Image 1 (cartoon, rainbow, N blue to C red):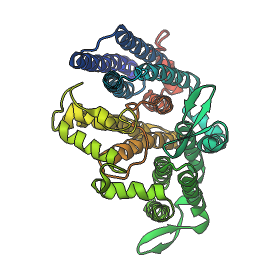
Image 2 (cartoon, rainbow, N blue to C red):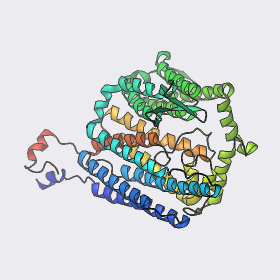
Image 3 (cartoon, rainbow, N blue to C red):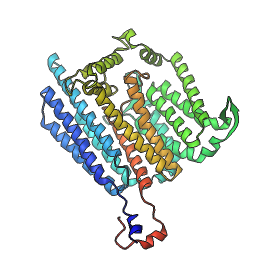
Image 4 (cartoon, rainbow, N blue to C red):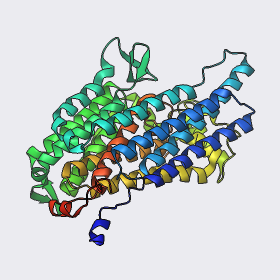
Length: 462
């Protein structure tokens, strides 16, 4: 009898999550202190911000403990550590901007770290709302086509007159009631739900193979239609909005989910071929794509012009070396857009190669735990949804850091949880909430009707 009852006492590991969450917060506090020590800047607002972030994370942990007691204990602490490191670096770059304004006699700029902290609050509130209202991730499958239409609408919303806004040649933002938001960040969540629901119902027909070319199974022509539609949508994003990053992310996401749903290598080969063709056409037809590729191939050919950003990034990495210059002791402010596109370059300079590897390991933990939740979940929709959401974070991280280190062309995406930007932060916290919901369903113990008879009264929460 006692052995049967012990089966119900499954460890939720929420205490481990709490300890890791406190450790993540302390990492951010320690980084903030080092920045202030190196720059000689200390303010009451900074400590208030740190304490506010700590309270927010504790409240979020309480909601996870209440709503998803069996969820993976590493997901939330990992992204919290990334978020806190991002806040510390934004604070460090704010100080550099203030010092530059003083030396130039310019007006003092408004610190961005406090706005980022506000977006962190919004993101964590969205996280808690999703966790509270999405009690079962399988219910999202009912909204497959609704999510698809919403994702497309959000993706092309910046093209509308009056509210659409163009920044640095890309039309990605909307201005509404004084707020600037990038709807494409929420579009990737909606489209992931759509892809998962669509592929669950079509995976058997998409896996059928009638012919082989060079030993590789080729799907039926009518089944290639969905792939061509996504390819065309990705090209439209590239053409109309000049957003290379989102188009790559969207198409790559669909290819990964399609391969997981069908297990057919032919889809990967077809997708790769379409990506190559699309890239070649875009290179020939659009100047901004050509510039990105030329800078990627040889940034030093125009080091003071189009290649200035990536060249400064490479110099920053070189200056950081193995162990970095230390918090507040480098020159990350010399890289344009250091708070957004190139925040990993700033962190690489002041934390060095070892620090950057540690940050990459945090992203690897998030991807690994998300993939583990996908494998462990008991329903096909949850499996595909978890794989898709994990792919969004993993692929976006690869595209961004690959661009900063010149592994792939620059795309203009932001580094998840690290970069300054509210749209990305809110969307990524929603993604983590959904992954935690799926992992809770995957890790929760199953109890049969026969076993319920053996459970004594009062043991419902064991």
